[in-house]
Image 1 (cartoon, helix red, strand yellow):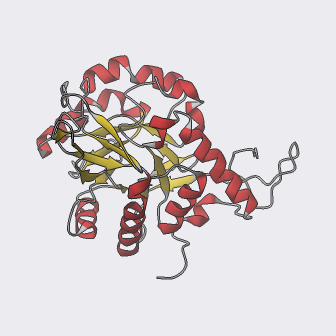
Image 2 (cartoon, rainbow, N blue to C red):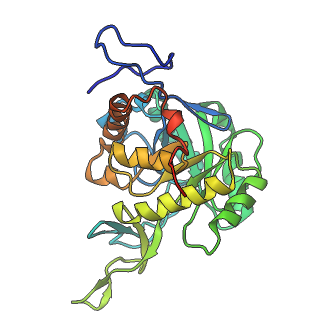
Length: 302
């Protein structure tokens, strides 16, 4: 099913197809997106190598692979290993560093019409601040900064804090991130995991343990999104973890997410974010949903 995407009144019908026009627009605090589907960091590369498989301008935003201020080599191979319902990875945040990414990768993304969220990492608050400062020359070309755990309070770009589920009190950490200046949250990162090769008696990944992602962690992500948005009403959340279909995206929105990240599914199918977007919109049409934002937090019951 194909529908025409743009903001419009609930009763509007596309004269060409006769189908309802679904208002797919969402707001993440000060950030306005054309639709709620974004790519999760680490799953769409550093530049445009994956968005060549589809029209980048169709997606709400593309989150680039996490960057540090300087180049970083990452962990030894092998770095990825399939699991029965997902993937374990220990890439180790390999990246070219912010200056090289701005020079070599951002122009190609912008040329394809992508709205870009930059994901940053560091080992100290100062690391995050230095990496964010290096982005200033390109601030007009970026949607937001996403950081893991720490939240440098930067006044030139909105900050989204990406949080780990591997904690005892996620709500408390989420509240601290918002209090520190984050305009929204990304929930969740991968779960800690380990795979063992019985023949070699060694870890399956070169870096030892890794992060589990894919369909297996969707219930964990849904619970995290629900708990945090219930405790912090009004704080926008990008829900990510195990989203493979449009129905998965609907479930994440119902749990409380404002936008939805598609990650591991892209390794199997680079066009997955575009397919999820189409399936989400088709679901809205089939269920008489005029505005996708009305799904956020609309789950009934406890």
